[in-house]
Length: 115
Length: 114
Image (cartoon, rainbow over all chains, first blue to last red; front, side, top):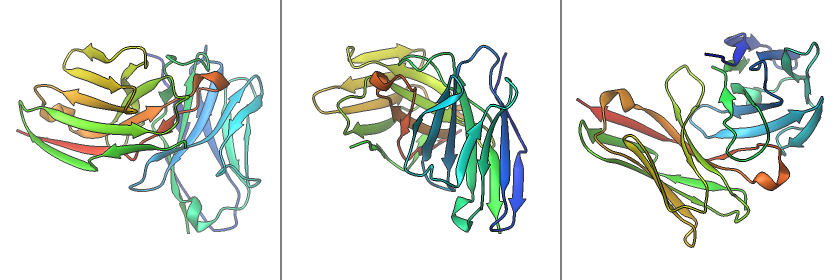
């Protein structure tokens, strides 16, 4: 069964450092997403990406965040200068379309710890 | 207006019992309401979903009840099993933007006791 894969599973970084979280979406999917889940809190939408551009982003997704699909298979989230409050589980997801009723498939997540 | 409120935060049910999780939404533009199940160390996985043009959807032991006028929907798990122990998230989506964005509730941790 196809799945979304994320690497690394756990990343520890120093405050102020740049991190890149990587995702390989399901191969025939066209829409890609990043969500985050701070420990004990709800899953929050960060950004959606289609046709090599951001289609929607949340207020959380400020200038320190960027996304890229560098090679047609990987989908990355870059955090330029990490803050303590960026510590969270980051989930990548993909779907065939952006329409309602289209299931979004989530990866297993990358736990980011900023120290 | 984007919020989805979910309750209870945690739930303990005996094996064979009925688990009920409730959600309320604010955005009347939401037109798709999925429930996701998340096991520890895993990402959320779609369990069942409903559109607002129906009041109920059933898949096996899982049923969504939807009340459009009250802007509420709920998940019922019949004959709850220990394997159902997980965190459940309701969500809403506004399909008009065609971006697929999901707005999640706060989550409910379900424990089914043997």
